[in-house]
Length: 290
Length: 154
Image 1 (cartoon, each protein chain N blue to C red):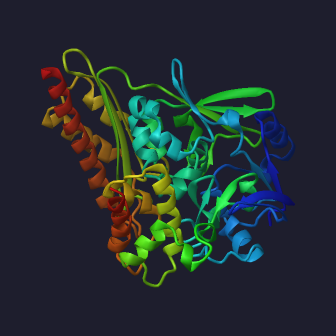
Image 2: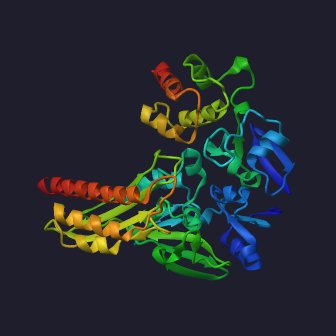
Image 3: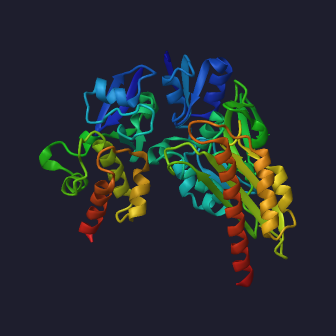
């Protein structure tokens, strides 16, 4: 039974409390995952450290990178003009997390710390080379998102640390980005497969950079390096697209469960990649003829 | 533990345990039983209330997470059958209510939508209602109610 509820108003207050209580407390932001896990008995704690109202951990800013405070909620991110322009896949992913009720409460920091294999935001963060800032008493540590997520529900966060900020690389010039997912409903349902793709073209119209990340098709969301490599230097002809899709298919390790068969998840993941790449190719040609 | 909260425009100071949800606070401590418990896992939207104007699932929000917040429940929308809001009237006129269990949740979301967007499109309406489940109406009459309200204003 949870007996204490500590409302923190500053980062100093949280890190002080974390250094005192460590793993005996649970950090509570929007609570959309934590409260369900508590009621199911999946986690137990004596003490909530509530961080949702810490103003310095909220908001979206831009300098050399896009910086998102860890307790910024999904609704704010989905509606942010900065995010729509510079990390479009994150705006798209945030708009598909649950319904309005979940988006108004759930936070980006919470979504990554929950480390669900199906977390919608993670493919978007992976293609934007996100870096997670972890604060502890008087210290800050930065970890790449790829290294931060270890496996299902496991992250690199130490017991005296809190995620304070997620920083991302803006979409470069002459690039396209998208998040796509498949599930029985667009909201309120865990993705059967989700994919974020960021493609940059050079002045000749060849792919100069490719980032492809998937969720819900393995124990944790990941970048498909082998599929990315297939696309470097490509003009996205049918053969290259199909090679990239088959490389991606080799890398995914989906589950066979009541939601969908592993074979279906593999096929649908490939199909989403093909469809996205074909659309980018079309849009790039349109742009070139203008 | 002491909790300071504003519910339906009344400031309250209550003694509430750390694990108590906002839904239990409303129903058990304050007797506001218009807000319903459906799934108790933040999936169905029956327990929707407004927190500082945004809809939230009160079944998965700790009461203490609402310290200092303004909460509006269905009881705060209309205090009697004579004073129904335009959304409530439109739901009745459009046949958007059958068993009524999900209705308070739908009304809270449509109230929030109306405040954010006076002329929502059908897509805006359906997207806003994505977090609410209704097992009777098939949704059409609920969406109609929201559309009819927009049209009645034009």
